[in-house]
Length: 146
Image (tube, rainbow, N blue to C red):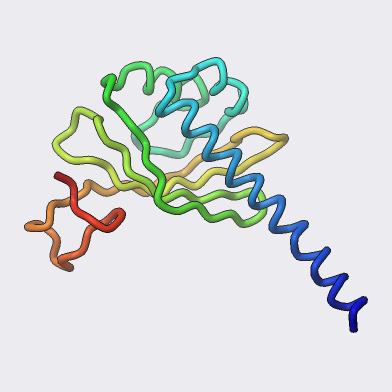
């Protein structure tokens, strides 16, 4: 019985460890590019062959970097939830300071390959105020935007 528990406890953390590392890696990449605007670091995080599926971002790593270079200085990413499944990481977050009428609430899906972000998809919604929310609940976090 002790042997079985030992095997279970050593088998499970390996998967969790990889997924925890993937989550930490993607969060570090998002922090480097979106909040710190560290483009040299971003080039290490994002693959030179990066595939972009977003309707709002030009193709490739260069398209993403060019987009971020053009956003307002107060642009910021805030993460609310990160989930990993193998080499896929999903992030639920808020982008503020876009220069648009509303913040974006986004689910980003990234695929990792060879230690870099290789592919990206997203689902984007405009964040609404309490008055505009039919559910009466915030879309991100525990309070509405101010």
